[in-house]
Amino acid sequence: MGRTRMGNNGFIRASSTALPLLIFLLELIRGQAKATNRSRAPALIVFGDSIVDPGNNNEILTTVRCNFPPYGKDFVEHKATGRFSNGKIPSDIIASLIGIKQYVPAYLGTRLDDQDLLTGVSFASGGGGYDPLTAELVQALTLDEQLNLFKDYKKKLKAIAGEKRASTIISRSLYIVATGNDDLANTYFTSPFRRNYDLSSYIKFVVQSASSFFQKLYHLGARRIGITGLPPVGCLPSQRSLAGGIERECVPLYNQAAQTLNSELQMEIQRLNRTLPGSRIVYIDIYTPLLDMIQRPYVYGFEEVKRGCCGTGIFEVTLTCNSYTAPACGDVSKYLFWDVYHPTERAYTILMTQVLQRYGSMLN
Image (cartoon, rainbow, N blue to C red; front, side):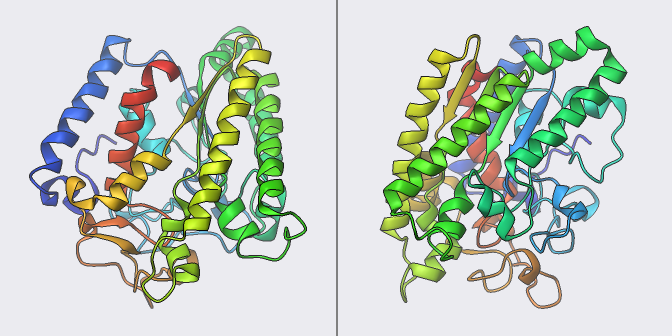
């Protein structure tokens, strides 16, 4: 369980500038965790999309899956668990850094023992979003379906821990919600199904859908909730290929849409904190640090930010990223992105370390 190396020896091959910085940040976070008895949160409970799906999609009828090589090439035993990366995903990294456990398991299809349930699971489903249509288009789990799984989880938790302890775990746990990318990238900009909305109206619809979910989660007992904003969607390799022209540049319209959605989401979160007693809902900016990694890759030891490591790096993701037609690159540590949607384990670790450095005291 205690694996310390990163994907394809990412630490070792990173630039001499990036290495000391990353080690310093990791030690800072670990020190903060020890200072608070490792973690004030007894469990990490996760909702969202492929960014934090550790394998739930393996158990449902969807093409959005990755339980085959080269996915997982740098995970434990080089196993493709259904995580959409070469190794750990953000939920694993957060749980590890704050001292809960090394990996957050999928709720579906996993043999969960009592300790797994007591310390948290992920209900996330690759391909989903705040807009329920986003998940429906690819037969992924909607957020309401993820909440139904959470209700089932609560029953199991009460059975093994008792009513009082289970209630304490639910109220004191850290909840992470990471989704929304596919609402813009897939449902709005790529498919025709939401074109009855102009962009501004669609963003408002997504934010209201998000708010409804947060309130449902609150009424089911969650109090400390970290909400990740959208990344610079227009700089994902997939969107560069689809709309970035011959040079595959970042798409300004997509990035502006992500920024607008993030701004409105942040305002809605502030409103909810004022109206939901005892809530601590924290907006987590990942747009700014990820854009910095894209614009200044040399600072972090990356050489390639426009392509994914898998295959040509131009279009491969899920089924098209496979060991038969799209083998992985030779040195994944040089790449910011694993496939055309998802960062590498090393990129995730840098990003999540920065996130916890900035927001850890608010969340933990």
